[in-house]
Length: 313
Image 1 (tube, rainbow, N blue to C red):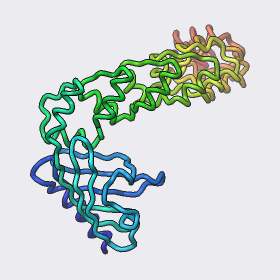
Image 2: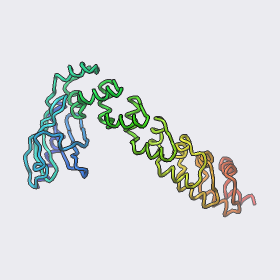
Image 3: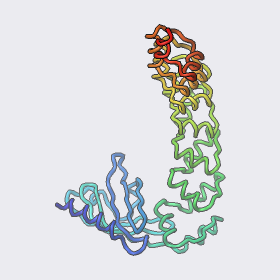
């Protein structure tokens, strides 16, 4: 019953969040990785992201993990302002209301850092506080070559483009601009992924890395293609294979039909023109086996299939 009432409170507050965007309802839930998932719902605004328990002031593990509904009054203190939370917790799940208390002097701090801060109203400060766009974060990013506007720093924080990540990719030889840095993070170009790709003999540039991640060029995909003897597996061809759906299973099925040592270009052409495994098997059942790849592609282009072959015999 108490849990039902707590959840009802959360959704009630979400529907009738306070009069301004910097007031509203909150929910905190325990994650498997030990962090908390924070949900903040205000007028026309919903934010949800993981956060460390230690980020909060005045909130204890005993309150969070209490077996019965336990009141809590705590804060999230950030450079742009402080978020004051009141509510209850039970079994790692908390709900309640919050009020944002902006730090009006943060505008001067941003000006001192040379960061454009037009329209820095309470709503803007609230966003900066939620994403923890602190002065120290901006200084570190500037020291690494990223002198950006406020929107770009917010994007860095949203997507996890931290100074530590920048240093790690710099050590690997990558110095992406701000947009490319965000793209690295959005598409999962982790340092481990880069190392794994390099271990397979590739030295992708920044554009290649983003393309690899967008189109799913995984280390497993590359290894599978290499083990099956596919030729000409350059960076562009790897992406083309993924774009056109030339999977490891497809190549394995081709091998079982006698097609070995095919090139990436041949595979792309086969997929573009619909040379499926069933198409090849049907031709074989019609008496046409071991047809060269180029001939198979030509047959598909001109509409020659097993039925046509049977009718012309």
